[in-house]
Image (cartoon, rainbow, N blue to C red; front, side, top):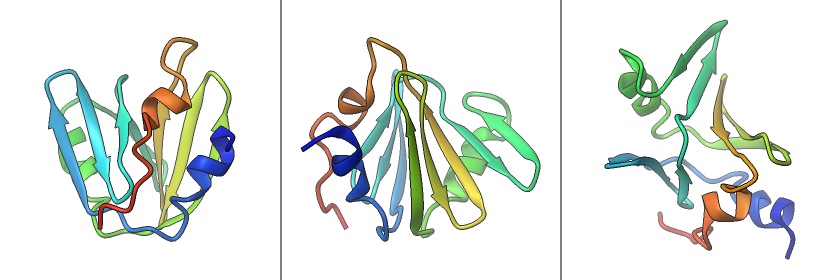
Length: 108
């Protein structure tokens, strides 16, 4: 299964939790780990973790369902949750498969 097929499994799933771990942020529904500061874009506002108010903004995504995603290889995974985009930055060392690290599982 390629990265897009793997990530495609999150469409329709609900974000059930946001966990702030020592050196990454983890999102639960299916689990996705952001090793670089995740970004939320909503209504023209952009907030990147760990900026002030970013925790509140990330937590405001809880209970929203994934409507779509876009994987830009080597750059970002953009997940659409209602009217907001959750952007998980990627790079050559931390690619989509590592961000997901086999975690696309139904943790609902």
